[in-house]
Length: 110
Image (cartoon, rainbow, N blue to C red; front, side):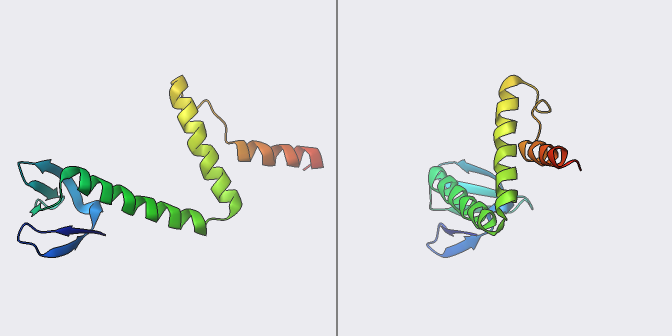
C-alpha cells in the first residue's frame, strides 16, 4: 500500500497493484483496474517513486525469507536472463545451480 493525498487534502492508502494508468492533466489522475478514477495531490514522479519503493520493500522481504540456495538460484536466473536477452536467446543459458548439482551427482556416481 502507498500513502497518497486526495485533492481535498484527505490522506488515503492505495493498493498500488490496482493502478492501471497515471496521468498528469494538470492534476495527477490515477485510473484503477476497475475503471475508478482518483485525483491526488502528488505528482506523477512522486507516485512512481512510492510505488517503486513499496515494491522494493516487498521484494526485499521475500528475499530475506528464502533459503540461501533459493536466493542464489533466483539471482543467477535473473542474471542469466539478462545475459541471454542481450544475446537474443533466453533459453541459451542453463541454470548454474542445476549444473552444479548435476556435476556433484556425477562426481559421486549418483
